[in-house]
Length: 115
Length: 115
Image (cartoon, rainbow over all chains, first blue to last red):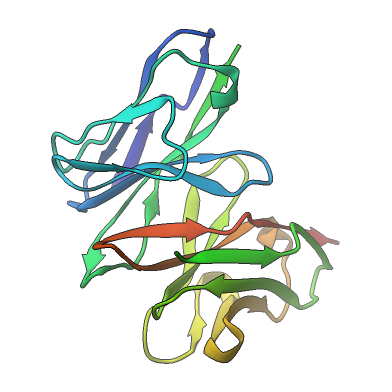
């Protein structure tokens, strides 16, 4: 019962470095999401995917990129890390019931600090 | 576009007291509504959801919520708070949007339970 697995759990980056946050799910869900969580701000959608090969921007996509080559994996790429990207990142997946998202399953998060 | 407003970023109750966390939504189409709970340093997990049918929904850990269309509300309640209920709670809404579906979250309400 792995569910949604995120790696790494913690990371410190220097300004200008790049990295990839990994996300994998074993529930055969079509939908996958990346959110960032900042204190008092709730969750903001960065990118999402409705299936392999299909991705779209969310509310705060600048400075990030994603790909979805398989149903299982949805990595998030940070290019040229900036202090404003210090946050906790959550990956989630959901099944599709009809045309509406019915529930999202979340990973444990990646706490990223950019210094 | 749908949106969610959670009234009160912090709520404090005594152990054994009623818990009431407020959520109002905006959606141009019939929404699906969710409450998630986040314990410290963990991901979000689903407490309960409303999709269709009965407007009073029961979730895990004794929580329930009532969908009131006329008030565009989906408040979360629990008759008697336990210390273990201390966490952050997020209300979320989902509705068809341009052929793809995204969960939109409120900013969260941190619940403190005092002994």
